[in-house]
Length: 191
Image 1 (cartoon, rainbow, N blue to C red):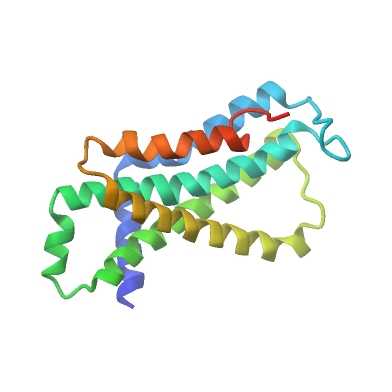
Image 2 (spheres, rainbow, N blue to C red):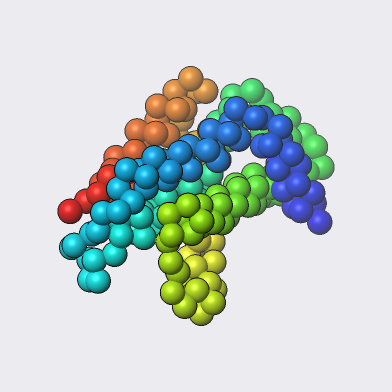
C-alpha cells in the first residue's frame, strides 16, 4: 500500500515539474515525428519484405522512450535528491527505502509505458504504421517493455551511484546513453 502511495506521489512530482516532464515525454516524440516525416516513404531494402522506414523506426523510438523515462529520468532524479539531502531525510521517516526507490521506479515505468502507447498511436495515426497480429503479439510486447523498463531502471540506479554531483549528472548520464542509441540505429538508419 505504501508503495502505491509513493508511486502516486512520484507521479504528481513528475508531472508538476513541467520542464522535466515535457523533456522526458516530448523529446522521443519529436525525434519520431521529425525523422519519420523525413523518411516516411523510404523503404528499407536490407530487411525482408522491404518495409517502410517508419515501420522499423516506431519500435526504436518506443524503446528510446522507455529508456529515456527509466534510465535518464531515474538516474537524474535520484542524483538530484541525493545531492539535496532528500534521500538522507527519507531515511529518518517511517517510509522504507525500498518503497521510496520502488516509487521512483514505478513512476518511471508508468511514464515509459505511456510513452510507448503514445508512440504507437502517433505511428499508426500519422504515419500509417501497421501492427500485424497485434492481439496475439500484445502480451509479448508488454512483457518486453516491462523487462526493458526494469533493466533501464536498474541501469539508472547504478549510474546514479557513480555520479559525483548534480552538475555532472547530465554529462555522465548522456555520455553513456547516446553512443548506444546511435550504434543501435535509433536516431539514424543503419544500413
